[in-house]
Image (cartoon, rainbow, N blue to C red; front, side):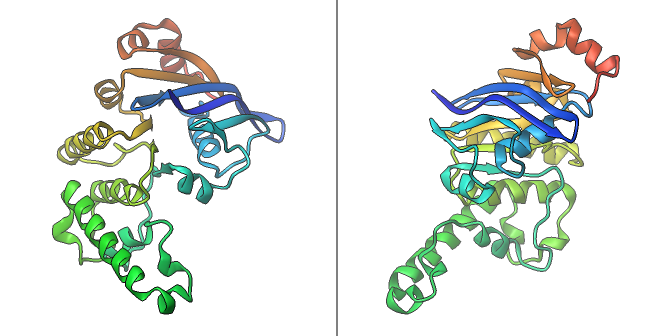
Length: 254
């Protein structure tokens, strides 16, 4: 079953089409790679899927329901989370506090519930803390749970961002260049955690310039160039495709 579909998406900025008639379908449980040369339209495509940018035309469907007009926070509540190429945790908050901020639909978010449903609010807060610590343990950051996020390295911030988006219990996660700025040792941890989370039933769409990482994680890759679909196939098919080679080596870009 397709959990995420983009149908004929186009996004124009003035007279320039950053994304042009782009369609893709992501199967439940898949890790789909989205690659292309710089300027190919990948980030704009992610912005469209996540709700940061509205399409000029086309539609987006999440688990069968159209979400084209929904803002990003509603898409998160509906089951689609997103990470960013440059993570931006709240630097002076602890890792645990950063995690707890991402929890969705807490009873305590309603002012009067803190007085009328105190026991429920307290139970949800305990459960959220347990979940946050468990996810920090998953990404090997639990020992830093009470430290401010500003102490983290670039790679650790990527791990925190992955753990934080999991606090919302997403069905689909859009990963924007998770390998960028990550040292080789932490990259192996990140790959292992993506696989582990995927095995639990979470679907991923991955933008990444690290082709080795994409080939290791993805069974299917979509290639964009000049804002449009260039090629789609398995990693070995993509690596042999002349159009893909030309796009990267020949400088095709939007």
